[in-house]
Image (cartoon, one colour):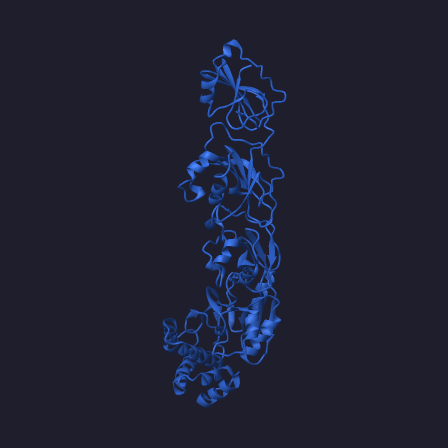
Length: 535
């Protein structure tokens, strides 16, 4: 029988088998005309090691395939050869290379020949583990993956010995399963900063490993932040959900921290995937974490917000309500309710909040003619602190476009907790302006409404000074201009002037300014000044 050499580990089948560093080394050491190269992972139970080439094949290297590649690691080599003969017979690989198992999850079982805790990134974790092994080749696996149907007898082509072979995790190209040539990996990563820069990455096609479904955590608050704060992460990724679990988890790369993105799964982040590392950055909002991916968020809707129409005797209330009702009926998604005739601004807001079944609700005021194109699928951002969201409205008299008289997405809890302590109910709580047009504010249907609307708004603008935006808007309210209705413009302008006069009279005293909250006081003031009667 010819000499037998192994390149990795002995097979134990031949008492005379020897170690060789390479094929060339085996050919040099061989004392017979041919030599065998064998691999300890192959099944040689029925293999004929007495095989000899035919005379016309004596100059060929004879190579037996495996079920995976042209070369199983089984070869019969002459001292020198000029051709390669790939044998049609197959030598099956039935054994697996050793397995280094990376544990992301606290308390997960030890499934490898060596088990190592994941720390920070894959490259550092793999270098720490592989620097202590004696294997030439090995698998690196992860406890986040399900290997039930994975074939660990896989091996690379003979032309790929120095590559790092990567198996996708589901549809994530940068997966958690690697086939590694240990010495070359350690050499090539010695001065490497991130694994993505590895010189010869080979992403194995058509073979992937499914991830186990990530754990889910339900949160009851209006922001996901408290839930992330209080959760003890034992897994690398958690799906936090407010109402319903989404089962088609995105597969997020765990190769390094910057690839571990927070991923909101739907509008408003009712469902959001949060990596363990996010908690290290968290202060007041999820946006404290620098790696956020919103690519799939806008394609999924969350529970639609209720719409509450608030009216109190406005002349155009029924017209705007009917228009809104027709629009919402066509959508068949948002729940629409009306709150009518509640006296006092804080009381009417509280009534609107009580009428809502959702954590936020769209407050549509009776003077607002809703923009037909407004997207009622809009959602608040639960990755921030709870707040009110103020949309834009177009003022039909002075042409300004900003939050005055606009629709507001109110946070229900914040509304109910506010007794109305400031000049502007909405601005008493955390709030954000959303530069989306919600509609046109038509308040010119009566002299009283024009005066009252202008008076209250200009008081707020005066109180907000010094502020560039407030100064510009105040100037616009006070500048004579003719729009659609002469009477409407007249009383809007008078109301604005009266507000400046009153503000100066009381020296900006807060308690005096807050009287504008009281419809009775406003009515009395307008009657004394102008004999103007309320509607």
